[in-house]
Amino acid sequence: MKTIERKSLLYKTGVEYGDYTINHVQGCAHGCMFPCYAFNMAKRFGNVKSYQEWLEPKLVINAIDLLEKELPRLKDKIKSVQLCFTTDPFMSDYPEVGEMTIQIINKLNDYNVPAIVLTKSTLPHELAKLSRINQYGITLVSTDESFRDKYEPYTSKYEDRIKALKYLHERGCKTWVSIEPYPTPNINKQSLKKLLNRVKFVDYIVFGMWHYNKLISQYKDHKAFYDECSETVIDFCKKNNIRFHIKTGTYSKGESDLL
Image (cartoon, rainbow, N blue to C red; front, side):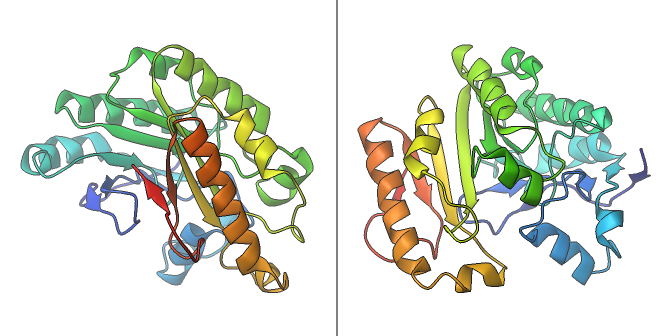
C-alpha cells in the first residue's frame, strides 16, 4: 500500500454533528458514485487527479507519531474524534488501514478520548474488546444490493454491515447508523420503515438527504419527500428510544435533533 506523511492529523471538523476528526488515509477504495463530496474536494484541491487515483488509497504513515504530539496538547478540548469524514477507516482490500485505525482508537482511549467510527465496510469483531467509550457505526442508505452495486460498488454488502454492527451491539458496544445520502424514489424506490427496522437495536441514527447530483432535482416533490422521511425517522426513534439527528437542509419544519 502506498503511503504519505502529513504535518498534522487532528482537526476540528465543520460537520454539524462532529467535534474533532482524523482522516488517516488519502483516497478511498470504496468508490462511491453519489458523487462523493470527499472525492470532489480532493480533486478540487489537487490531492488526487482522477477517480482511479482516488480508488488507490494512501496511508498516513506517521499518524501515530502525530497523535502522540497532538493529543497531550488537545485532549482537554476534545469531546470525541470521528473516524472518518473524508475516507473510510476500514477497507477490506487494505488491511493496513484497519490496523492503523485500531492503533488510533487505542491511542485516543489512552487519553480518555472517545472514537466515533463510521464505515461502509464490515466492522471487525476486535472492536468489541476495546473501550466502551467508543461508538461504532455503519452507513446504510438501502438494503437493495443492486443499488449498492451501482452507487457503492466496492463496499461491503449491506447484510454483512448490519450483522457486524449487531455483533458489537450484543457485546455492549454503543452503535449507530448514518442513513445519508438517502435516495429519492427516482433513484431507488424502497421502504424507509423496513430499513429502520433492520437497525432497531442501535443507540443513535443520523438521517440526511441526497446531495451533489442533478437526479434529486429531477424528482419534483423531493422537499415534501424528505420532510415525510424525516418525520418517519423521528417517530421511529422516539418510539424506540433512539437518539437521532436530522441533517441541516433535510427537514423543513419542526424538531430535527434528539441527543
